[in-house]
Amino acid sequence: GAGVSQTPSNKVTEKGKYVELRCDPISGHTALYWYRQSLGQGPEFLIYFQGTGAADDSGLPNDRFFAVRPEGSVSTLKIQRTERGDSAVYLCASSSLDRVDAFFGQGTRLTVV
Amino acid sequence: AQTVTQSQPEMSVQEAETVTLSCTYDTSESNYYLFWYKQPPSRQMILVIRQEAYKQQNATENRFSVNFQKAAKSFSLKISDSQLGDTAMYFCAFISQGGSEKLVFGKGTKLTVNP
Picture 1 (cartoon, rainbow over the protein chains, first blue to last red):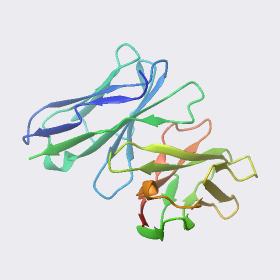
Picture 2: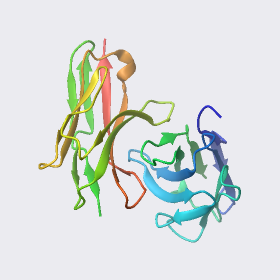
Picture 3: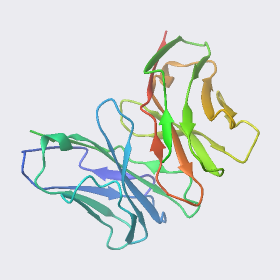
Picture 4: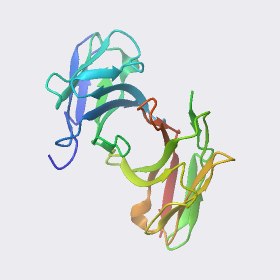
């Protein structure tokens, strides 16, 4: 596609529910990143994919968070047993082989009530 | 671990004037990249300008330029001829070259351009 696409744009869920956030990167970009941006903060790294594999998942806060990229394109961030503290904007970015300039989507605003 | 510090939570400037946003960083690496990203209310992070650490010449992109001081680990953004559309959050970010692939961001500076 022309840019990084994230769906849904906004998601409201109840505490304890399971959510999935989707990211469709720029076509041909092999690197894909997930970041979380809490209110008033800069984005914080969650996980990085190179192709289908997670090259670095050191930013995932706990085992309730999981992400996949089965075909090396679309990625899904999955959050189990959501907590109010998970409320944030989840940003996805992709980059090409030079892995320097990252292009971001518009994010998914997750609100856990 | 790398850190990025933006010491100005908010700034304002009059339309057509010049403003400088500050950023300092800490790293033990010698090869890295620095970025300024703009985040308008639409939430999308937009790359404004990039600087390679091995280049002494400061990067420029139209009305945007940087003052990169490697020894001081300082990386400020100058916006000339400010426009109303420049109103946004601005984030300074760091990425190492050949190491961890993640961007490390500062907390951001909220810039308001007044008419």
